[in-house]
Image (cartoon, rainbow, N blue to C red; front, side, top):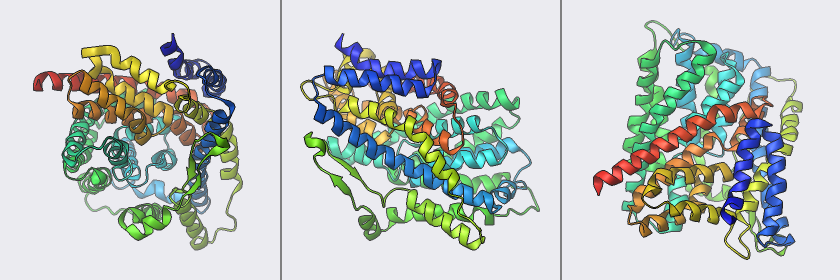
Length: 484
């Protein structure tokens, strides 16, 4: 009974989201999780502490939404978005090829540079500007982000999420990285096929599938190679190589490409990447506003405002406004979107934090869930990715999913006599895939794109994500059987 109760918030979020909508789901989920939180034996101080952490997390996400919408609005009002949409017209006459080039390449690039849900705040707006529907654009970008969040921003999910807390050796990290990259590359073919189907439902049968598969190969081959050598660089350099090779592959003879409208995004990428390359700058931007013991609960919360993509967004937006002589900063739209999304985002974040911090007098809800799944015995590897998916769905982060469930995955693998590196690779793959259905990402990306129907995005992405996790689990099981 206790295990079913632990699962109840997640079940409610999925079922009510698909039937009544995300707004109803997060409110119902918050009420139920609050009741369960006190049933678990936690007190009022812990409840307030968990809500305070939720508020800090919500503010961090909202700053990204505000920054992304501010930059896009300035570019739109100064004519740059219109120029940007036509800048690649001469690259290839196929609109669908340009769609997949940007959806895959830019999603991977901004995920590798910044993480923090940044791809969902940038790439859908570019695809919408090309003439594609908003819901489709957000759905596809989040599905691709579910592949390339594997190593997140400069390897954080594997280095901070697994190596540091689990005390893994460099050799173990290397094995986990290449195993996870190999699995995600195969799973990615399934995701790509399902994206073909999703796009085809709205735009008719695709005519350039072979070329899109070539584009996928352009990114996945260097991605896997770098996963072995330096996972923190795999996503960024894989994306850059893909974009460069794609231009050579698709460019028509005698044509020129106007790259000037892309300059603001290039400047944004540089500002996001600089702290990763310059240690002194990274140290300075790492300043942390700490709340060590909120409401006497022992719960620690913090904000790192200088590390958020918010400041680069604003800096580039102000630069565009200055150089394009914008008569206004057009703040009403970004501020309006930030306020409107708060009412949905905060309760969804609160549900996650209440589940995590419920372990005061007994194991937390998330630990009960992990314990339940660890009892599956020989079938465990098939469902190991689903633990990672669930972690990302709850927490909104590949890294936090690994921090929350990595230790239990490692312990279960050891107790069942399974390869811990393979099981941790399955955890990493699942945690990455979970970004496609995480409510935080859906709400933030949809809000930036002006979408209020979050339910449709979740419905588009849920089955592909679960099928991808199942395929990863089956591949992992097959690998364990072959290597036994």
